[in-house]
Amino acid sequence: MRESILAIELSQRAGSIALRPRVDADLVEMAVPPSDDANDHLMAAIDELCRAHRVRPHELAGIAVSCGPGGFTGLRVACATAKAIADVTGCAVIAVPSALSAARAAFRAGEVPDTGCTVALACKEQDAWCTEVAFDDGAPSIVSVRLMGAGDEAGLRWPVVADKHLTPALARAAAAHGGAIAARWSAAACLEAGESLLARGERTDPLALGPIYPRPAEAVTLWEARHGGDSPAVGGR
Image (tube, rainbow, N blue to C red; front, side, top):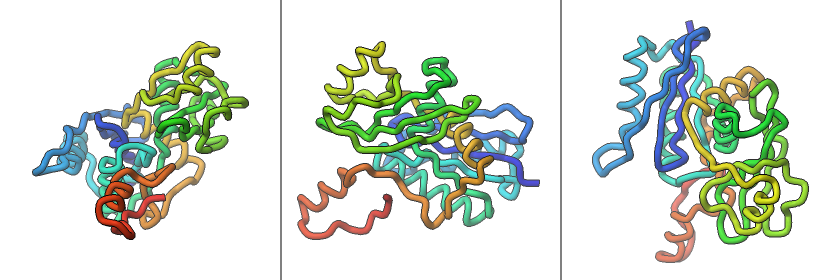
């Protein structure tokens, strides 16, 4: 019977995976060691976690993936791994924008109210990728998404949950509302956000799964600067 849910959170330097072995079971979380030249460690960690909780491949109902914005390599490894698992097991794929993972983590920690918040990610110079999030009994959902520049702070849903690169304009605006909340990410939060998406019937075609890039990835712009012309195909959206 398919009832296990797996989640991958590799959008940041510190990565983790989570598993709900059964519908009525508590979720379990495990850190994923940073990648090195020999191994990215993700599949080994998934295998270890599933074996420890006696979850076999055909029992996976879905795999939730924190798909960005975030680190270029981590996102692509997470998406590629989820595609491979879905292809082999036939489980559902749930693309979880990393803003929902961060919002759910903040809600779990009691840092944001049930009226919602805004998550600011991929901050660079004067703009930020801002996702307005609402909660329904703790389950986060996206209200709006935009790449927001300086002077566009009016109308945001406060408080703001943000990465450490928050723009000066947003930092000043957040200070007037009690200050920005430092974003945190966990596979447990990603799993819970993914479960709520799956319950609403929001699945992703594995072939369409890819990282969310609010602007061209730095790896792409560096390639083009060094080599000129078109960059190699990198996918994403």
